[in-house]
Amino acid sequence: MKLINKRRRFLRDTLALTGAVTLGACDKLSQTDWAPKVLGSATAVSHAAQSALSRNAMAREYTEADISPRFRPNGSTDPQSKEYRALAANGFVDYRFAVGGLVKHPLLLSLEQLRALPNRTQITRHDCVEGWSVIGKWTGVQLSHVLAMAQPTRAARYVVFRCFDAMDDGKEYYESLGFSDADHPQTLLAWALNGKTLPIPNGAPLRLRVPRQLGYKMAKYLRRIDLVASMKDIAGGHGGYWEDQGYQWYAGI
Amino acid sequence: MASIPEDAISPPSAPAPAEELPRSVRRVIYRHTLPLRIMHWINAICLLILLGSGLQIFNAHPALYWGQASHFDRPWLSLGAMRTSDGQLRGVTQLGSHRFDTTGWFGVSKTNGRTAVRGFPAWATIPGPRWLAMGRAWHFFFAWIFVINGVCFFAYALWTRHLTRDLVPTRRDWRGIGRSIVDHALLRHPHGEAAARYNVLQRIAYLVVIFGFGGGVVLMGLAMSPRIDSVLSWLVDAVGGRQSARSIHFLFAMGFIAFFLIHIFEVIVTGVGNNLRSIITGRYAIETEARDEADQ
Image (cartoon, rainbow over all chains, first blue to last red; front, side, top):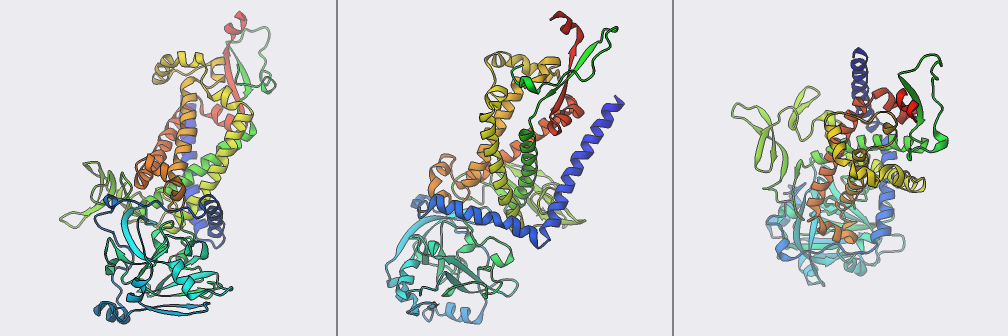
């Protein structure tokens, strides 16, 4: 009996120790330079596997009945920069959306001009990296259409989205996409939500929709887009505000 | 003794002296092959890290829903916090329409001595502090290892007939299921030669956990991926939507915890040393009554 108790205690201690050591080791490793890089390498595998599996497949589109009563905003919900406040105060009539960088024809488009372009309406699900989902009806111009107007040069590899909103640390929000996502038919520069002018908490006057990726990819308060060959020299160099904080650039999972 | 390859059986480890009739004979068999032992431990590490990092991800929005989207006003489970009239933080777990005070465990717990609002406590998550990006990095890395290990196990189990011989219950197993349930409930465990093979409840449990929980948790994980949903929307719809998939993913994880607890319990009551040795070295001792031997 004594022996059994001893064994039980040994087993219990072993288990508790294994658990504590594993969790403690995971915390220590998370703080190193190399371990997050090793762990992050799985994203490249996921990206390759998911791209091969789904290619250009369309995100599920829902019906009017599925639309969430409120499209929950997240991140910035009311940008405070002077420039943005002035534009908002005037109903964004002075807003000019710029397309620049490695393009043959730089563009400067007013909201009116954007709305006059061929548009697409889609009822799609928005999945936040935190885990929740909401469904909304989006209307806007396909990004591929705007890119075709601007004609990216051969050197261009990424589309970088610059925003009006600064995050808590004072850094401006930005995001980026490769061409496979930028040219997807459901990738929109959206100016309407649920049939109404895009509200400020949801990214007025213009925001990105990429329904096959997570919410943080879908930059709000778009100021301009730039076509670039590399993202190394932009902000933290990882292709987005959250990516610079350690989130994956590929947010399809 | 269908479960043991003939050539794997070791001779009795301690031959009894001839002049004295031994009460029992101890025979050591080779129970788990090396690849199975390695895959078992890779799986154990994966599950531990997937669970810890999964709870970290859960903590980013500690509420679960049924359906395609989140109905924020009616989660079926939420680990929240509230402030009492005297300014104290209390953890509140809501399950359906029931609310429980779970301060210290769920909703509100101590992190490095400081009271914090968080779904699951810091000791259960990877990493300990709130760090969603890092939790996701751990989760997706070990998810790949878990899947690759699982595929290797399946291929190996088919190839060596471990699956059909040791795991799928025989017709005789099915007939004895009632008795096996009673035996398990009374903590009466097979002895002697009967202990050399998996019993029927054990077989069912392993199959359900490996293929039901294992396959299910991976599929429900994939069903949460917005990219994969473009080709798997039928699966998402089949379970009721992406938020349902997230809930079921969580429930499978809880199922793994339940299995783990039962697994450890059974390991203890059927002989810690013997079981541990068999899953580390492969060698498992069975005690056979000497009288039985003499009868044969």
